[in-house]
Image 1 (cartoon, rainbow, N blue to C red):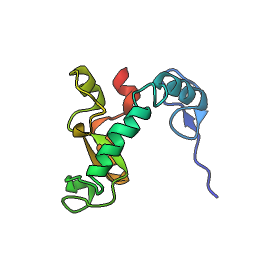
Image 2: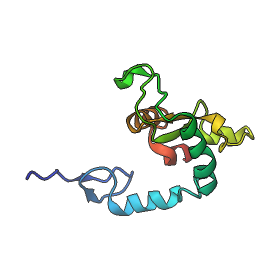
Image 3: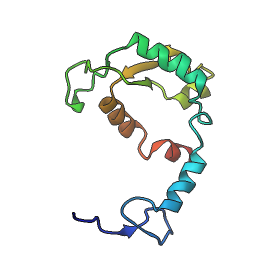
Image 4: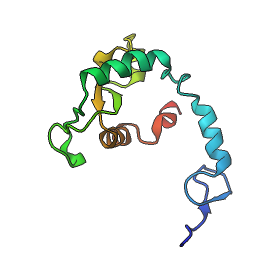
Length: 129
């Protein structure tokens, strides 16, 4: 089995070698800065109110972006409650309840990954920087 070539950690200034991306220490530090899901606002209330409400309303993926390679709408079973059209952070800044299901839509896994990659490049941690 071929092994992946070692490369330098992608964290600026870190000299450690890794098989790709960040080294173990830098990855752990980034996760600690990011905080737990509950610390980021995705706790019990979010699951019971937002996620449950969105998935009950949208049991099938409502994504209409056909660049993902599906019909309009996608129609696959929803697995994720996505804040749309505004992010959780934007809703909170506008003094709106980010756990209100009106501010979300149901998406399947592939559509949610595509939307997150397009609208949150670098992930949540990059938004906080």
